[in-house]
Image (cartoon, rainbow, N blue to C red; front, top):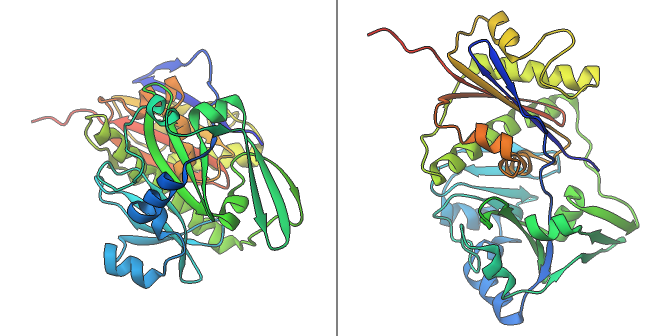
Length: 336
């Protein structure tokens, strides 16, 4: 499995390409003490794995929207930027949760807590074994995984800790039950038995693409406010340009900022009659979903600089299959 990210920036008609397109990080594994595990179940989001959608409604209210996913569950999106989280529901029960809002209770973890502090309380493992009714699955974590994206087991639930490699602090968390973790397959995997698969028709696939684009936009803005920046405004015209580039890359089997047929970002924006003073682009391929790709961009220096650029004000996101494009712009200043 390969994850790819790339970035481009345009200043009017001047292009800047990062000399290296860094590969963004992956994941890590860990076990915690029984006492800490019990604390997580009692206090934090991990306690919600397996609970009913009615219990979710009673505590968190109605979601802002319900998005489909490629893994059988639907995401209940709670998109307040300070309490942002996505709760995955399958057959009326919670099977996964992603959270990055700075005020979400993620006990026993804390956002912006140093990984060095975490390492003092938990032994890291480079293998995690998962057993389902009809198979046995072993996730193998690399050294990079162990430093950037640890995976911890809590009984029947698992949590991925997304670590910001530039600050060494916790960026976000993702909880999942056993079957969902095997569906996502976020690490190298050896297995005996069937791999859970979800069949998607074309209509659902398109809905998932749009859902991922919205989630990328939301999570990007959460990360910006956590870094003291203003949130971006959605630009539908720019989103269409971004979608066109993702589709172009997927269908014509290339991965680059410059299309053989449609040109570079400046040319694509100009063709769409979108004026801009400053523009930039992040691209990625093969990440499992929106949370994974945003965390990857944050962990690649050039992409992070674009995502957290205070001069950019508008964003359009386009997702086609597993190809992702973020197009950022700052429009020309309006005359007074």
